[in-house]
Image (cartoon, rainbow, N blue to C red):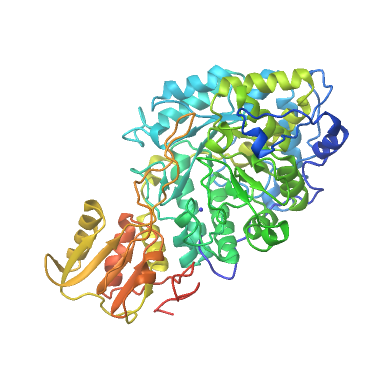
Length: 614
């Protein structure tokens, strides 16, 4: 979730007000004596010494009017204009919702019962691929929307009657039936590369590291706009992308090629450019994973991770892309289940007021929507989620969207009980619900027709050519002869490259220049979680893969295996294995195009920015 040129494509319309969450922070200070409740579901509490802070209130649960004081004020310029009432815009406003939009949303959600508010702040998972299953999940608990995981995508995702258009229409209908007059949140992790939920019928895109290698902001914006239009045509309203993590390199087991770069500035350029493109298409982009997942070595799908760096160190590296995006007006940020030792050593960030309110809201000044990472992940469910308690803790911490709880019904019930007991204020729910409604309304545009789906291969090939990075050899020359033997990789990938080379007049068989495909480093995070939903969509392998000593070595994922290149070997880093990527690789191999990218990460002796073509 990233192109890189020194010039950044700005996202306009950032409100200029006091940091969001001020009112909530005041509540926390006032109610600090009540912060005693601990939610640990295992005896590990003794060894982990974890105490969950919570905020309480004597609110009686009656509707409370609000001016949305902790959200944004009126934005300036065209990006701050209120959305037309008819909702028929073809291009969305960028930046954050205006104060007028927040006020209107606050008035609307204040009319909801506490149970309805509890459902509105949850975006849940559903089983299966049918429209009915998705709609029933919304009806059952009054959810604000759903997340589409890989196992929710029908075999023919673009089919109007049984594919995703039918699913998203059913979800919108379920929200409307409940009397809510705003769009549902229909989210998806369509990052590109290994985290791609919709794998057919749409334009395939590589991992985020390709954007870091290309370092072309205009191109990144165009690709995000392309992808956003295709998602909107299917009825999706929110994409949990781009990835704003700064990878530390081969020791980063979870993010890998999902990160644009190990250079915070490259990451920031890529993220801001993509955010602009998504917003232009009418998709709400959600950058992730604050406080940064690229420099921790534990997979939070399995357990919570600990970030040992100080806040000062984080501000210089991991938080650079987030701070830049906040300044540019990013509408939403996803949390990570990472303990920031220097801020709150007892609780993962998703559940920590000190991190979400104290750092993200108050220190970095974020006024938009805070979305949790999946609450069904091991980092949460193993220790913090007895009876839906983690949903309450996330809201207390300052989150607005509780994403994919392991048990949505239990979470709704826990939130209701927390308001009734005074542990959580009704005003806190109204604040989050209003942010959700205002953000979705602000971005919502009329969806383009089906013709946009899968129609952007030319742009995808432009990205591939701009990102493929050559190490060794002579730039712009034929890297292979008239005969080639393709080895390594999967059968599918060998067949795709073979087809592209043959189309360029190359004889592919058992003789000729050796071209070896390296499949190492593919994203291999936890494949499923307690509440369902497959996480990884590609198999992948772990550990280093040795490159050969001759011919051309092509790294289809992270470029780290190319550190083992021999002196007479050419290396190509592709950052993806899509059809447009293989087409661009064939052009580079046959000298029809130069490899346009530079290394976004260090690979052996070659540092960031290295390339045989620069």
